[in-house]
Length: 110
Image (cartoon, rainbow, N blue to C red):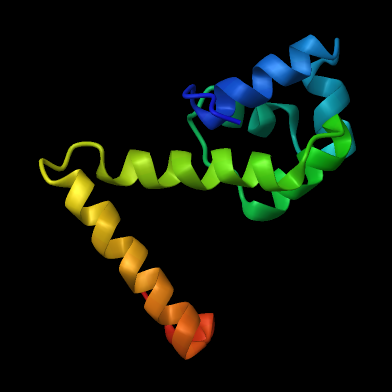
């Protein structure tokens, strides 16, 4: 999935493409229609659990949808930085280090 649109835009496009209303999908997700609307408008961020559930509802590959979700979060966090490319490179190295040392997420606090 190489879609460069925002995660919310992607969800809205898929939902509409399947002919589903906000109410239909919100009911399946057991969330408020207004919450789903805000996620689609990129006014509210989704959770990983939301992404997994929406992939099931839409019959999409969970991995591809999570890729879009996380890349969107990272891009929105660093897009204004002049050295965003270096930030990404260092972050990639840090992730590799954390995985190799098997640091538990519970130890990492921000």
